[in-house]
Length: 466
Image (cartoon, rainbow, N blue to C red):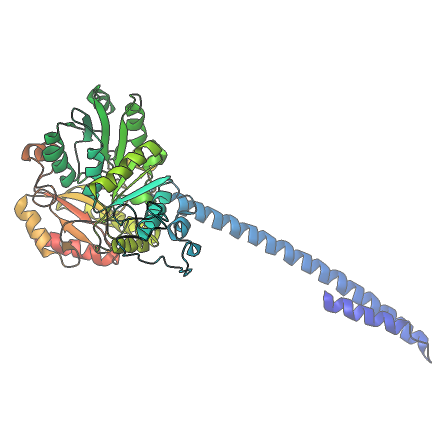
C-alpha cells in the first residue's frame, strides 16, 4: 500500500503541472490513471487489513495452543502439583552475592581457615572458629533454607549427624513417634542409641491417622517421618500428621525429605516444623559428598539446633559445602530427568511377567497415588519392586545388571540397584522387616540420568536372567 500511495502523490504532482498542447487528452489520461491508482490504494489497504486480521487470528490461535501446551506441561500428564516459578533462580543466587567478598568473586570462594582474626578480645567480624561458623558453610545454609521457603538452615557432617542432633535436643524420659518404614540407619540410631539414652520410641504406620492419634503420649516431644518412606515408598500425609501432632504443645514435627529434595516436596509449607536431608543424595547428586542439613522457620528450634551443631561438633568441611552449593545450581534440571526416567521404568516394570509389584507414587496403582499428587511436585528416581521368587532370583537379577550398578545409596547421576533386606536395611530386626514386607524379593532402584532406553534394556536383559 505504501508503494501505491507514493505513485498517487507522483500523479497528483503531474496533474498540477502547466498545461501544454494536447492537455485535454493528458488530462483525461491523468484522471483515468488517478482513478485506477485510487482503486489500487483501496484494494491494497483492504488486502493489508485482511492480512493483518488473519495474522492476529493465527497468532491468537497459536498463543492459545501454546498456552494449553504450557498448562499441560506445568500440570503434566501425571497430575502432580505445578512447580511455582523462581526455584532455580533461588538455587543460583540466594547467598551467592559477589558483593559480600572483597574480590567480588561470582563463584563463592572456599574458606578453609579453621580460625579468624579478631579486632579485639571477643570482637570478631562474624566468624571466630571453624566449628562455630564458616563463610562457605554460611553461603550453603542460606541457599538451602531458601529452597524450602525456610528462614534458617543448618548443615552437618552427614544425614545421620543431623538426625543425632535432633535426638540430642531431647531429654531422658521424652517420647518419639517414628514412622515404621525408615532408612535402616535411622531405625538403628533410634533403637540402639536413643533408647539407651532413656528416650522412648514407638514405630507407627503414619499413613493411618487413627494410629497416629493413639501413639501420642503426655511425654511425646518429637514426630519423625519419612515420605515417601524407605524402601516401601509409602506416602505420608504431612499436613494431616502435623495438625494432629500440633494439637499437643511442645511436639516438634520433623520430615526427612531426602527422597524428594526441596524441588519436589516442601514440608514446611505443609505444616512441618523441621525438614531434614541427607544432602549426600539428590541435593548434591554427584555421589562425592557425605553431608546432612536441616531447615526450619521456628527461631527457637533453630537456636537449639545451632547450639548443638557447635557443641556436638557435627559440622561439614568447607570444601564439601562448596561442592553441595555447586550442585544445587542444577538441582531442578536433574530432578526433572530423574522424575521422567523413573516413571518410564516403573511403567515398564509393571508390564513385565517376572515383576510381582511396583512401588512408585507416580503410578495409579500406588495406594497413596492421589495423596502424592496433592502433596508433591512429582516423584524422584527412587523406587522399589518385588521380583517373583526369592533371594536367588533377586541376586541373579542384580548380578546381571550392566548399566545399573549394584551399590547402596541413591540420588546420584548414576543408576544404582540394591537389595534392602541384606544391604541398606539389614540392621532392621528380622521381625520388623517381615511385618513391613522387606523381603528378599524386594529390589530398590535409584534411577539416574542415563538415556532411559538404555536403562530399560538393561533391566529387561537382567530380568530375563533372573
